[in-house]
Length: 374
Length: 259
Image (tube, rainbow over all chains, first blue to last red; front, side, top):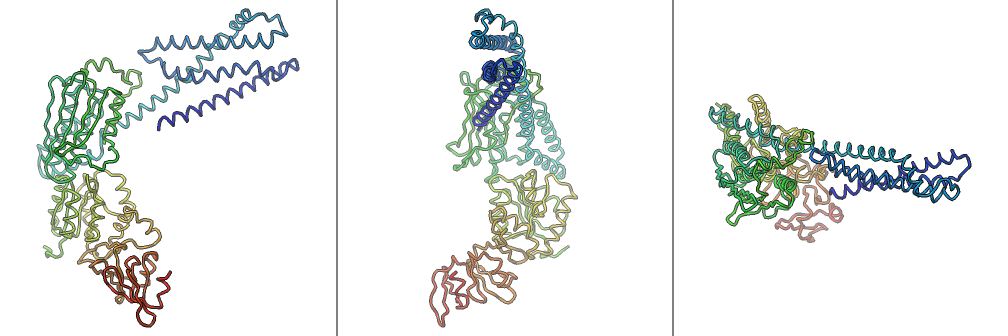
């Protein structure tokens, strides 16, 4: 429903600006009328002041829109400056032209000394141009400040979500419980192994800053994760990987496989206590990287009405990163078991790092904005 | 060594083998505990508990497929054991336990915490067959099955009935009719009969009057179970139920049925 919310906010903001400008116009014209001490009517004062405020009210949404589009982001500074200078100039000229027109139409017939449009325009410019530039700058600064405050809170929220997601408490505590049991059973090697793996996982979850990592790095994370799950489920989990060698350096969203594997493992053991196999396949197809995870578990329920959080988050994250250039689908395989497939643009991780603008570059210190997980 | 009969027959339910091991290892040193089975899925748990009728169950809450609550819900009409819930992380469940004063273990747990839970289970076992020991679980199950509204009105949703040396829960809607039997009441549900320590007067107050009606001094019947009303002697009537049972409707109580 963000569309509706957006529209509601827009409507509210427009109303606030309109009311504020109307009040300012009334206040200014009243003031001007008082100053005239009977040499003019209040409606004349309003006719002189109102157009300025109508213009301001009309320009505010436009300036707000420009401020959001051209934000002086590091790679965009020169263009933003140019756009805003031009917009500021247009704003000043339109305002001055309006003012001049009012003088000429309303005041000149009574006071010919005020001169023609051309002459009057130059005088007006000399008086008002710099104030208008200042007004535009002030409005721009306000909207930019609001924009960056918004961005900052969004990033903080995303960071928290990512952290919580990677440290799925259910997985974490169950793993600790497994470690506790292994210790009681005197299985020292297993304790050391699982604690080491858990350390690696935590480190990655806490410190991974990049949105995208090379597939080889992601596979190391997956290896740690699956090693722990194998111990938890006592070797009833078999994992097979078919990774095309030319894909190891491909950029993939960090921790993208984990929620899918978690689904496979946790649901795979739901129906019975038998073993399950998980097969991870990664291949390149023309300009796309294809990733598929299949398992021999119970598959998706036929009456599944809503996709789980893991799938929904993965879909949202892929969409955010690649837009229409990605595909994400899942279903049951003919022989039973679930299959999750995704296709993302193939890029080598080193290229991706150069092209990808992360929030970090905005100086906002925002790490991984991932949302994936169950 | 305690005699075979006095030992607490215990079952562990968890989808992870190591989690089941954790409980079994700690139970090994307890002479009064006898582990009679383990289950790895909710489905297996329902079968195992129904069959083995254990005194005590260590029950994992978060299992994929069928969670611990559903296991209890399904098994309660056959056998309601003393339950120690075990969970890794489930704020909803923990809140439910707190609300109903039920004991639970958080994984991983310390030796002391485990022993404390076991001690409480022993106390409950000592008073097993006393429905008060199961009040928390009955309320929890009622909350979850959406019958909380009935309960809030003060109407009974389930009877906790004695069964061997433990309890089982009989859903009020499964009851056909109830007959007075001294200080007890005999509850007829399907082909089973259970005794509860309640008077007809108490029952009449605790049962939803839109579901149950008293048809004579010593009989209450579920209205939906009545098939025919047949005229008998002296203004009395015979009620025949769907299962073939015939009950006498006393003329003094006729007006209650007409309502």
